[in-house]
Image 1: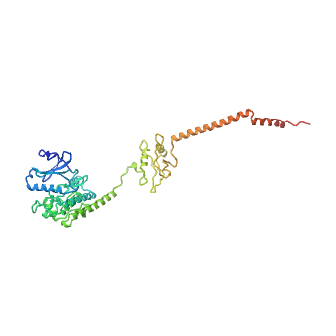
Image 2: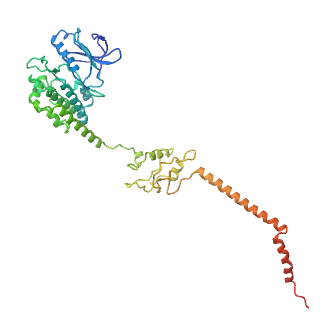
Image 3: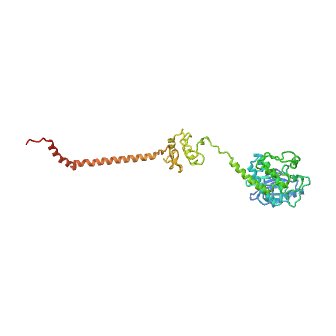
Length: 439
């Protein structure tokens, strides 16, 4: 709601409330933003000075206060305080933050079908509580509907009609806003809850088209169209047009009740919201992410891991494509798999492996490590450990062989078994070599 600075003629203190800003002005008075001693913010309405002496306007103001007191529920602003005997009567209601429906449409244009139906369902449910209190608003229009974070609120019951109250109008006169009045109001006939249903239909048509269903013109022209011409709903969504048209029926008996309207609008809001969700276009993916696996087999951890393996230039190797069955295809060309394996290692030598659960085929993750063409990536720390073990084992084997050979050499020199055998064989060999002597 737009706020304006206080003018010189505006009061600064009304009752126990201090005034801060102007919220708006109407035919009966001015509405201010105020606060009490506890800091509670209120919307405080004060009758204009030139109308304070008019008994008819005082009665209308008292009717508005009475209507606010009778209505229960969250569809309206709660009455906080009032003083009908003051020189300038006033009353304060709970401040409702948020723009009016008129301002929202003026800024954003026509609303979506789901949003129009949702607002209409809440307003219909609110009118049920209003009518159960024996009150007819008689001036329901976009500027009298505030869109608070907790839902729409109906305000300004200045010309509301309550059971047993006089009309405070003369025969042949219409009280309300042209284009949103019901035909029976224009004719001066009795008002009923169906009167508010007509005004709600015109309000929802305005929200869907950003225009009045009876066009524009002078008050006389607008009132004539309301009574004698059909509403123009060419810009209304197909899902809402039949229901809004029923609300704008000339005969009050042909209009739906507020309860029927609330139930029907809730169904439309749910269906339109679901359709909007299903028809929402897919999220546009950047060219850098175009080659990432998508679908059920997509792994956010894998994306994070791939980002870590990017080189200084920002390029990264292309992973193998996954088909509909989830199996990995051959790796794409243009990327160096060994380089990716070396980049995937951390400073401490440990590789940030993806989660387990893959099939171990070439180009997939298996056993907590990403394989490349079926081979494990090189690990410098593991290679160093294997090299040290190999050198140590080689040295131990060589030392063992040398020790064994050293033990066998001295045994022969000390006259071991091999030396004795050589001594026994020497005479026989010498005898065999000497020629036989003649006898």
